[in-house]
Length: 236
Image 1 (cartoon, helix red, strand yellow):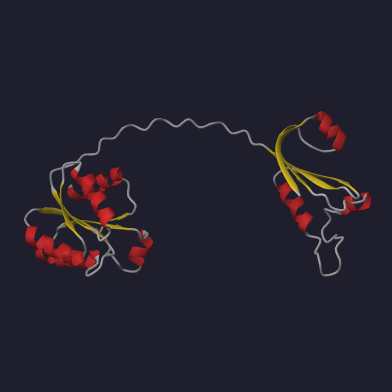
Image 2 (image 1 turned 60 degrees about the vertical axis):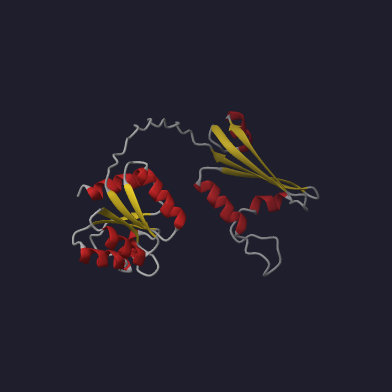
């Protein structure tokens, strides 16, 4: 069996020869085999629903009828060429769509505002934690790292007068992000907090992993988006 793809032009000559068609450019897919081939009577009926040359129980006669229907739904055509003892070729014509190339406007370069505040970052995944720290420190912030929820509570207790924002992963060992936040909020009510999670917002709130009203950003997060959300949280 062989499959060949090409571009075909359907013109008036094609339409006159085949008795159908619409002028235009088409994608052409040719599928050929070297089987027994078909006689003229069989060729005339192969696209009829339930027509089959196979024995009882070996075919439904719907395969080519379905193919024909799909091609017609896409405003295409299908031909069959066959010779007994030499094989069969199906040619499928699908119209090409002319689409204009959209020119994207160059995005304006946005300089995201940094700050001089201190942020407590609690994240058990070291690579994510280090990258977050690098982004924040690159824009002027001071970062205190915590490796899990309990560590975050302890780090906050030792630096409570310095920390302006909590940036916590939702799912962490020892204490999750919400539990760590609740413990810290008792020490300093109203502390600003921002949470991150690889789970969708729907899952996080549905499973009650985070209280309503606590801001959540989805991981992975672009550095520009992280800086924007951090600044918004600090400016609240």
